Structure formats: C-alpha cells, structure tokens
Length: 200
Image (tube, rainbow, N blue to C red):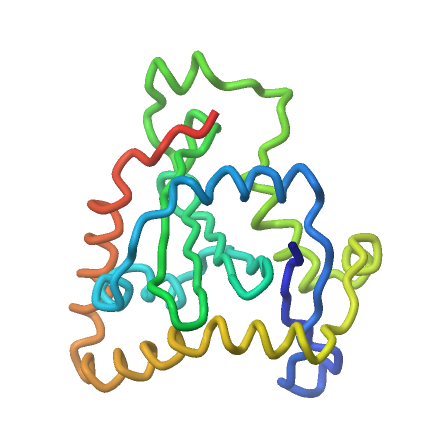
C-alpha cells in the first residue's frame, strides 16, 4: 500500500506533482480490516452524497493498493473510506471514531468504555500522515515520499477516471442549483453514515 499525495514543488506555479510514500504496517493492517466492511455505492448515490466532500474543508488521503484506490476522509462519525476500482462498482463504509467526543458529539457510554487514550488513533494516522506530508517537506522526507513512477500515476488515474467523469456529470446536472444539491448531499451523508461501525 502507498499513500498518494499532490505536491506543489514550485510556489510560483499552481502545477502539482504526484508523490507516493509507504503506508506504515499498522495503518495498512487497519485498512485491510476495513475492506470487509465495504458496501456497494452506486454512482447516483456518490453524486448525491460523498462527491460533495470535495467542496468542503474536510481532510483526506489517498491510498493505492494494486489497482484499487482508497479515499480516506475525516468525516462524521469518524472515518469514511471509499474504494475506487477500474471497471468496478464503488464501495464504501463509515467507521465511528474511537474519540468519544469526535466532532463535538455527545459521547455514549459505549464510547467512553471503549476509549483507550494511550492507543494509537489509526483513523487519524490514515488521513493525516499523508495530508501533513503534502505541505511539509520534512515530513515527506521522513515518511519516505518520492515522485511517483509512471506505473503508479497510471494506476491512480485509472482508478479515479470514472469518479472524475461523475464530477463533470454533476456540474452539468446541478447548474445553478448548487446550494440545494450541496445541502441535500450533507443530509444524505448524515443519514447514510449514521453512528458508524465500531471497528475493534
């Protein structure tokens, strides 16, 4: 598994280069556990839900595993993971954060009982190991990030190709009704994600 990030190498240019870095073993193991929880996500539901995340300030990362790309997003109720695979239906899941008061929510008794303040927050690491490396050169060097070889760029582009097409379809359909579409997406995400799965 490899993190995929976008790096602006020249501050005077808006051009970005694709970099990759290794996913630490404990983070990779956590993501593999999540695979069993992935459920189908139709293209219509993607347009009417997760796609709106790209229009927010949410933090996220990309993890490339073979031909599959995992979009890991910090989002209520903790972590959303969406898998893009060339020629296959998207899949996704919502995992509840181990932090009891994540997002300012009222913690349940189960949240408080299960929380281990000393344990690594692998949900956080999956997102911010890559997010922070995008803007911090020292973190990129320390995390083993390097310019992505051609085969990685090709696999990444193939994985996101259909999602990019859906962005264009959304633009054509939404038109001047952006606010209504965006609010509908946020409401759908809240309803679909619910309390999230507890992954122990």
